[in-house]
Image 1 (cartoon, rainbow over the protein chains, first blue to last red):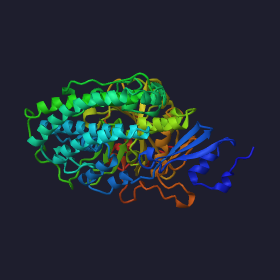
Image 2: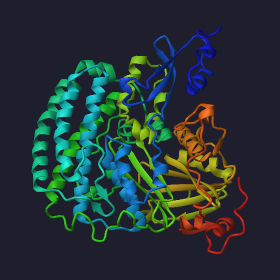
Image 3: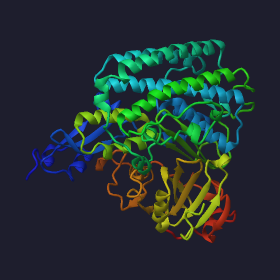
Image 4: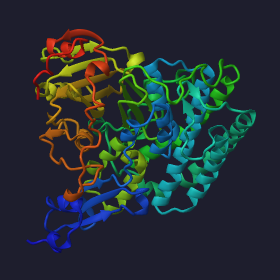
Length: 390
Length: 177
């Protein structure tokens, strides 16, 4: 049976031709993206379709690749900091923290208690913005327009608050080696308390209107199964792992900063499906609120300045050695591995993006599913393409 | 850590988790890597990431493994040739390694033998647009392993690995890979 149209005549780029080599002659090869709105940026997925069923899929990415790791080898340690806000626009403070933490480990820099508490507060607020962005956009992918307006309303309040200390609204470069760049003021603290009270009233509304909505449930339940074995084989973390019943949250499993002081739960679901991952994230928003509340209470009693005395200058040299530091980002385990040869420029910076590993599950998870469901599964992985491409 | 007992270990060392983020560091020869990784998989570890490090001693492949049930990171290090780096793939044991290996192939030109689909991942893929691996160091910047990391508290260590970390100029990098 000859394929129609013949791939040799159609052409296509390298990945299309490579993908078509193993295709069955009676199937259709379809590019989902890179311009498809549900791929959140420029992810492209090559699909081999039998009717409406997916036989095989291969994500193709790199369209947003900026080579952060090379930039790390050409800038001084402190100068690389602004890059960390740009790896993942959804949860940039987790990257801030991972890089700072790795360098602090390497150079043995102490972080004052107050700075640690500020880090927790801003990190968790940023997690809320990240989850709200995901929630609005995911429901939008599935065809419901209104929720993103509600999500961005809440997110706007958070960004207004976060811009006071960080001086930016999206690509934060707020953390410094040994603390944070600016202290929190009274207006921030009052505003955050007011926001949490408001957000607590809105979360039940989201549950009633969206989470318990039969249309959403029918759409996302029991699709995109990623079980514990797959999680281990692919190294998936974050809500993908917790949606498979693994209570793996670095804030509890490998406590960093002062997270061991706070009382909060690690929500898990055992359904392994898209709805499981959805519910995990919705519950995490409530848990983040709890952490922020407790941290705000501890803030006045936390000792020390917001930045340690004698914190390294941007051009400072770091001692030779290697260090790995990982934090729990909105999408999972954000890891930074740095190697220093003792000069003022890093020898190697390796960025471990959680979305990278989470997306690699997709090809296996979507085999045999309907094309329309693939979009629902992609969204449930909470993809931020700049983070995957780095 | 008795997981790798009765495997030919080049070096086994205990690192300080507080200072380096690693609990155990192992050096293996490329031929033993797959056996070691299989044991990690059976014991429930997952692959965090893998990267290459361009040094004067050769190309160092670094594999980070972690366990969900308890903190503590295990690092596997494999030294291979700097001019023609080659190493067996682990993408059939950990499917997640597939993309990581393609990324290392992009960035450092390391060839993973047995990889089912070793094509560019992030860099231009068309044959006439491909570029040199961008993360290879220039001769001026490249330095030896002993300037980059310590050997930590070794429990077992072969003379070849120890020679890499001693201050006297080592004779030659051990012929591996």
